[in-house]
Length: 165
Image (cartoon, rainbow, N blue to C red; front, side, top):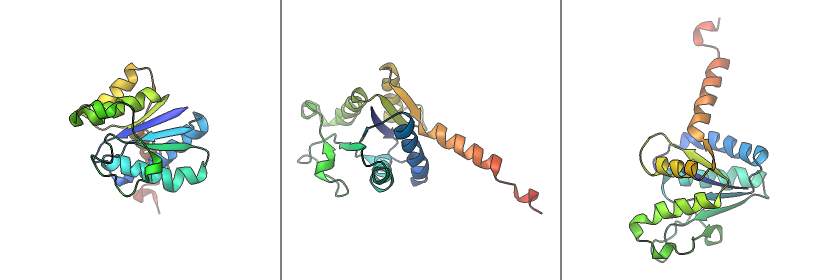
C-alpha cells in the first residue's frame, strides 16, 4: 500500500513526534510499503526529516520518494534531497508552472491508497487536496486530529500542579 502526505507550508516543527508516531502506525497497522512526500514548504521538510531520520532506519523495507512539482532544471533541487530519492510525474512538464503543485498533489493522491494530511484550515491547497482524496475514496488520516487526541490523553494522565502535595 502507498501513502501520500500533505500539510501546510507553515507547519510547526512540533508536529514531528506526532508525525513519526502516525507513520509508524500506518506502516504497522495499515501495511504501508511506500510513502510519497512533496518538496515545498515546512510540512514537506519536516516529513522528509522524520522519514529519513526516524522511520526508514526502523522500517528499512519501506520505500519513499520525494515527488517534484518542477524539473530541477526549472527550479533547482534543495540540497537536502538526493536526486535518487525523487520522482517527477509524467506529463507534468506540460502543466503551466502556476498549476504544477496542485497537479503533482493530485497525481500523488491517485497513486495512493492512504492519504495523511495535516490540515488546520478549511481553505487552501491542503484542504482542497484532502477533499480531492475523499472524493477519490482514499482512506484519510488527519494528523491534527491525532495530535489533538494525544494532547488530550497527556492532559488526562498528567497530574495538575495543584494535585501534587
